Amino acid sequence: MSIFRKLYDWTLDQSSKKYATWFLAFISFIESSFFPIPPDIILIPIIIAKRTKAFMLAFICTVSSVIGGLFGYLIGFALFNSIGIVLVNFYNMQKYISDLTEYYNNYGVWFVLIAGFTPLPFKVITIASGLFQLNLVVFLVCSLISRGCRFYLIATLLYFFGESIKNFIDRYFNILTVLFFILLISGIFILKYI
Image 1 (cartoon, rainbow, N blue to C red):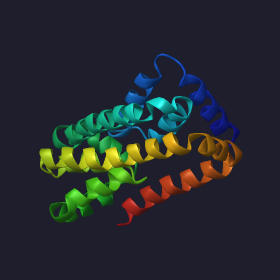
Image 2: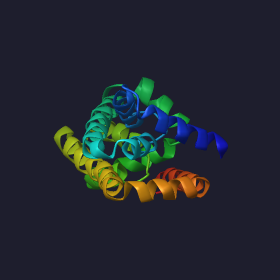
Image 3: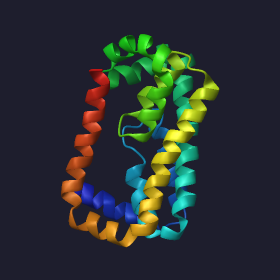
Image 4: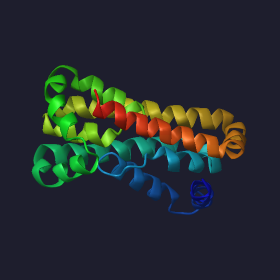
């Protein structure tokens, strides 16, 4: 766990640098289309270091994530046979994609809303939305709502309870790291076996 502790401490240190918001925007963008680590890992320490900018950081994270989701949508819509299939194979989601076609016609909006807010891999949903041609406006609105709710909830909690949350994270960092990875792996597992 010491590697994650070092990453957390490094991220806290980076959050005071000039480029911290650009780094957050970049991670938020790539996570919505292909990167496996969610932006929360970057957002939380940056907000802890800059609590007065919590809501602006949530805005940056939300907008970057939705724009990254558009790139994921593009992968599914136009580039699935080249880039998209590589990502599906990497995440071992072949069966999931084929089973999802029927569900997506009926419940695509719910997939975007739920995956955007929870630890489920959002990139799979953005690519699937393009692949199954979910209405682009509906996709954007649902992405904005779900990602916005997620990141603004984090920002609100950290804004009002930042110091106590920071102390809690510092005290229980190893346990929280394990729980985070359990949630992440559970999200991937749920998507594979729906």
